[in-house]
Image 1 (cartoon, rainbow, N blue to C red):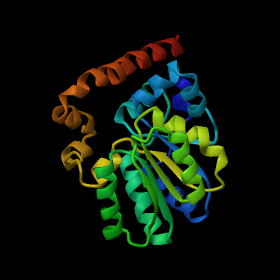
Image 2: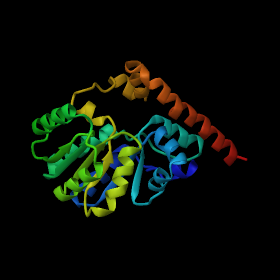
Image 3: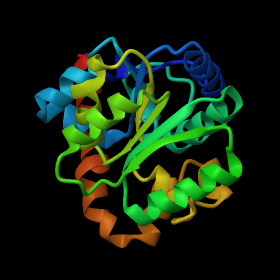
Length: 241
């Protein structure tokens, strides 16, 4: 488990966003994994997820507060959270400022339609190169369409680990592009779902807000986050001898 924490981006949120903007401006191909505890738990049991988390070509950031706290338990210094929804929103803003293009794969059609309206209103200089909902049967064919469009920003909203594994499968075929698996971020940014209020964000309690709003998440939260804490504590005891 510690090997994943060692791969984390260690600097601040603002430093990462500045680097992200430079990469977009300079057409520097980038694949970002916004890691929560679930991502690292998948890495331990899925060889494909393990391979991409350990690949030096992949940038892994601490999306969840559980990752930041887990890092501290293993004496890995991570400055702060870098939420995936903030990465997606900033990319849209940077793309608007730089006159870039975006392609979205995943989520529901109605969410994509709402997202396209938001992009047209808030980021008119960001060209929408394409949008394909997440229920198409052939995701590889969808990625072939993305490759043909040659967009600058590629947001994939299929959930962990499907979105990361799909990006990783096709990443080498592209010459440019900022690739991010964004989970439910498009739901929030399109206005289809509300993000947690500022209090919950400020106190790193977005996870609690989501569970309160969607109690069906409790089992998934236990299987990833609670088991994750026990796993990290065990790893910490082993490292300390």
